[in-house]
Image (cartoon, rainbow, N blue to C red; front, side, top):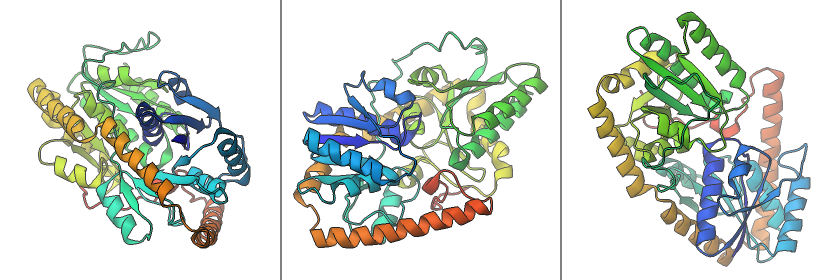
Length: 412
């Protein structure tokens, strides 16, 4: 098969990292895979993964007809069989590009915490947790597949220990090292990162600890300001903001303890690091034998009872790890075992390959495509109107359906 993979972004982030790593794994199964993407730091990884990249056509509107037209051109020129869009704007553009092309399939993956209701039901859809699969399938007539965020457990392992960049001269190897690798964006991510900064300021009063934050995004200025304030009050670098890194494996390797959600949490686990799972509304929970079953059901995320409790909740979650290397080793071993047994990249690629073949074999009938298109257009138009009204009132979220995440069954 000839497959065009279209991530929604190429800065550090779980969805786009999964997109390119899974694309490389599908290529290794013998298929021709090309990545169509915007610019971003992850573009530099594509040659190492053996993937060709086609730059996304610049467009003021997203999703927009110009991008769909460009995708249609590529399909015809390259003989593409499947376009695979990640997150709802690329999915809709891929759908528009393939609707009038017989024998070409569209597949979509949503790794956000909820699924846009206007994604056409005829598109085979992939989600990342069992709970989201069940909830989405209950309201969607089309098939919803599950691929839990895969991890390359060879490229991400305790034996892989790249050194930190030489430019980071403020890292202190004598401290207990906490690490966050994340997009720095207001929705879903920022609250927990600011709570971690506040928690480290408290922990440093009684012990040697340092927090390193790796990533970039629209909230980077807020994160750097909060870190600078804590560092100034402490008179030393309690929080290091490292910026974006094309390959952040050095950060996971450097850590004693990782904080994170989603794909970043799983990559930390692949490195055999003890993990505190970060969520929203003050949620932090240590990964151990008791919490693991819930994370496997609902995903690596949770919702607490209020933002103000975030720093205290994180300190409580860290308490068993702070002065106990044996517990850190034990829980790091549990993390590594979980990833290797359940989140294999090779197994995920085989599932993805089967989804592609099924999509090609079961292309929707033209009448269903027409009905789907009408429903999708109406739903998207309503969504755009609501977003415009929210912006006019100063309340619009910036990260779409991550900001409207369904409340998981797990909360704290």
